[in-house]
Image 1 (cartoon, one colour):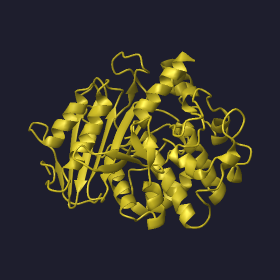
Image 2 (tube, one colour):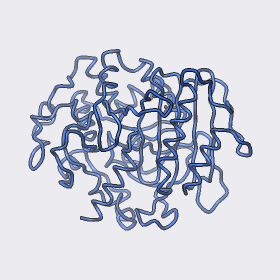
Image 3 (cartoon, rainbow, N blue to C red):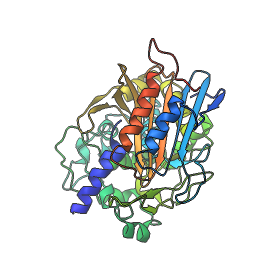
Image 4 (tube, rainbow, N blue to C red):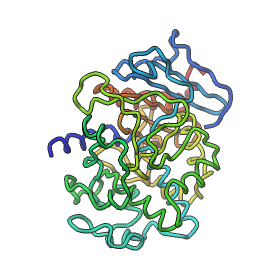
Length: 386
């Protein structure tokens, strides 16, 4: 149980510390010069990750920078346009689909879980008849977390034994951990989004994967983005993932191959920094949701566990230069990302890293995103190096 509690804390810190654009000319940062973006990427790499890649966009410009290697023990550079598991940034995709269905009049945010999933939520925790769809997306349901019970995410032995195992959403919903207090007004739980994926299937008659593909990935032309289903492999160019499972012994073991069915709706999407930039730009720019639904998504409540505010699948995070931005971090077994977009949608910053890194890695990623977004704050010009 202590191992599970430790793993849960790590999931909450790395996956849910709350807190990505138009095309245009590309300026690739030169790692041998004091480019601000490259310096910030180097700072993330210096915290101990194997590889790191970032992209920043503003109107008509796009800058990228990379550091480290794609495979530990080699000199292979991080791949341009590399694909990676975006972890909890998946939640923004899921919430977008739900809100599209709301806008179509096919469901309501005030529908109870019991309305769509009778008998699924109950027992020792909250009752499905008292939990709404809004509360699922907002993490105010009080429904306990499930991921600490997944062996492949908890130890090297568990990973080797169960990395190809397939979970059904129903199985995950029924094996929720009771290690999370249910009385909290806000408590981050991946189970909320597993249930949201199940509701999407009930409303549409089609899988979460299919709805994300048809409603977001294909219309936006996100060629590097996919929902893998039960496939343990990452298509296209990618850097390998590593984790030490909390032991603190170097990069750890290679965990690139993973059946992410345990993260349906909550963390399974594969994407690229460029595609995430385009997704968040389209979202905040009103291309995916009508104004009423976008307002629902961006109306936030305090998320005291994280020290930020949270909407529906989207965090609102303060900027050091004043104001705030929208975004979501993610972490899933060796891949970590932080994605953000200014409130006016004019600038995005996305960074991902491979391996656990060190105690300063997450903060260095957040700093990169926030400093790059501040480059577009009122009275300041765009970041140099573009």
